Image (cartoon, rainbow, N blue to C red; front, side, top):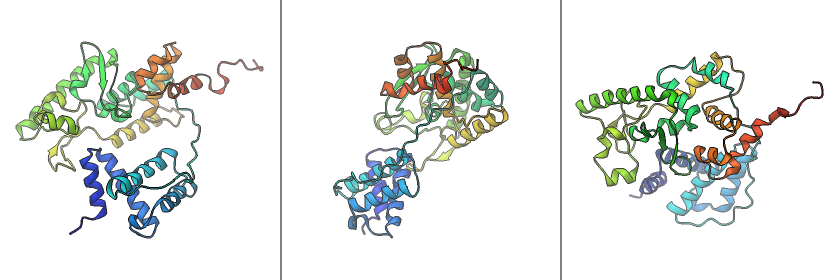
Length: 317
């Protein structure tokens, strides 16, 4: 019996060891594409239907450029990797407009006010977002072995673009992080006693070192309160803290602090970069700490420093 199309997609994604998030996103967009064209099979369609769908997303649904690109990548994967069919010219796709927004940056005082309304792991993670310039998922995916307390560094593994980088460990939270490691050790020991203790590992590592999943050094620095079933291996494991829960906690803290900016967890990273540039650190250094491939991405923070003509004296004054 032939496998269903979406099962074929999932199988190919797993063979290529793409993330579970990528799998969910690709399956979602392929479903949307098929439903948009009245459930026609993708083999009966081609570049014209793909162009029409992507243009619909941009023109009727006003999706962001990154969302439209994700949908395009999903359909390219479907046709090229699963159906082994090359798509023709897609240059007629109506592109989603990329709005030019300056990043939201908190002042030092606002950051302190927000931190005062966060507690426990949520506060410590927020401090790392600001103190080390981490993205939210980069912080949540930190393992015990990623923090070097001797060198005062944090290693970010498989960050955006699948790149590793090193950033600083803020001395202000060093003692807290040491206590966090001890807390994780107690949790891990208890899990092992109960017959569990495994953690998800990237495919390359799980293949080369199959026993590493139970080693303490590979445990998440910020483990979830409860164990859960891994959707692929079906094993009961302890994942990291929920991204959504943390985002909500930070949003609530921003409101409680009375900070009238449309900020989010990512605003701490924006603030990290802006405040370093304010202190006259070299932009290339900031680029490396943020993990930007192109310095032009980092340059946006120089515009933040001058937004609203801050550096220009008003004629009224």
